[in-house]
Image (cartoon, rainbow, N blue to C red; front, side):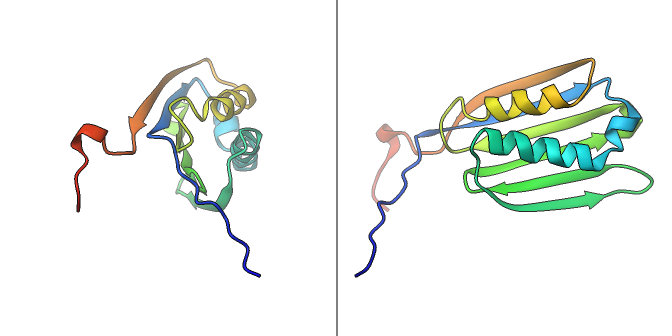
Length: 133
């Protein structure tokens, strides 16, 4: 007997959070294991589905981690020359999603301050503009 599964339907709006953390020590920026574990722990705490993790190291220093999620993606990138790093998470689970992951991540990374933007984005065509294909 085949198992039927109801198709997932995401909300009409997703969420995108971008942030730059300033005043991050070079020691922290170079602790790639800490950065990766903090990101993965934050995503798990917010119940994201982690599908793949890709890392890229740069010479003489620097790192990018991109995490493919069942709900979209997340990424961090270090800027050693500016003692800063970026954080981004996009999600299709609703207009305010990802804040738990963001708050958990920044609580694990010592920094002086951060500038953050959280905004919903439309992922479904507005009803008044829908037509037939």
